[in-house]
Length: 215
Image 1 (cartoon, helix red, strand yellow):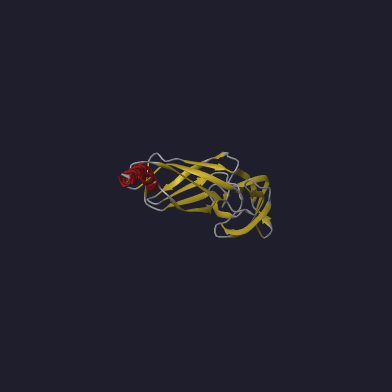
Image 2: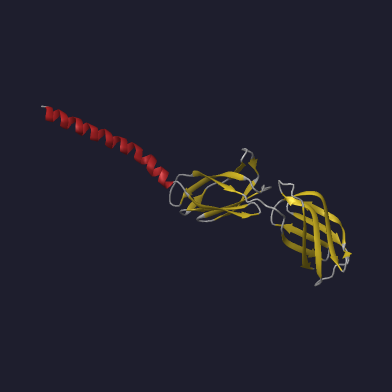
């Protein structure tokens, strides 16, 4: 009799375990189907690249980025591929940490969409660097595009050759570019430039930017 009772208890225990395991299995399977991030790379100028471990599919996917204080930052998705997604954050602050959420992403071949979360850090920037210089001969204007967003304070731009300054005035400036009107620049001639009053966005490290370019 005792052996039969012991055997019954053992069978009931195995049954309970089997039921519990069966109940947990769908949740585990769902978790395994959720998209997973393999690598997050900050590429400068507010650009972030997210690589997934597996191929993914997108729905009405949106990106939300927040700084360390929980403040939402303006961000846009710039590229979506089979296994990676890129987005750009406006007015990124050097030396700060950010978190992001990507909605409506699923592993390729599955039905359920998930929200994928991650974090990244922005390296501290000591100076502003020029990315591109363009001379518009028709409008007599020169534009300087920077590699990162900047903060302005009493900006001054000089474009010189043989100690002569060809800048008439600053036409326009925004978070990542400044444009000046010039007089007398000649195509094919090498000029020096000097820009003051620019600092990496979110800092007060105003320094002088200098270099050369060919008109």
